[in-house]
Length: 343
View (spheres, helix red, strand yellow):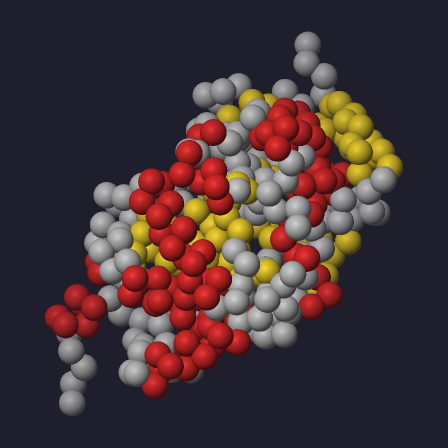
């Protein structure tokens, strides 16, 4: 008979903590037979790199009580019963409401989150003590129908050149699905709206260079068979799966940092909760030095202003956002043509 719980010893913050894993044999990935205990062990094995990438940030937990094929929900408030070594920080959402969110300071906290059925970790782009000002510029390259990971790779390589021209050092990871995430460390001197505008400026510059391969069009009907640069992921309280976070996909893939010189040789399926710990041991963490030399977004904001002066305005915000200054109507272009506003 399977044990009702197991105690996992987790190297954590220079010590070892015992984390209780209940229902350890619960299968999370049915096709592979990967259990809750397997996931907890994965997080413990990659703990140092996981905390370096996702720690000291407000984090939302995507929880799957019945496995990745079942229903899921997001926890923004810290789940009840958090251990005494776990902390939280109060953050402000676009609605102006404020609530606490969990902060991961050590691997044991992340393993405890797995005990609470967390599969995907979504860290903010800002630090806990300065949650209004991101210290990461993040750009999500999302292949649209008819395109795939191999189409995102050249877009990421060209985006890196764009960011270098803007004075930023770029890092890349797989999304764990078909896309790529490009990050640049920045000084936390601008709030989310400014960073969003910097991302839009980079997206438009990339689109100019690769017009047949890349799009910044928010409405799906306008994107075509191109890679979408999802600028809205740069907004406050909009997050993407963190580095080394598992994804709730059939192959138990992981959103994995890679070196630029290996990007054209890898595929998303190469990185799973079974393969990534060995990769880290053999190759080290490609993001280990990410925040040693943060840049500034001044050049990108100058490009944003240049585009404004040339008649390119604000772009749509997510549908759950309040109406924002300068935002165009939130109606897809085809519907706007069918029902034009009366004079």
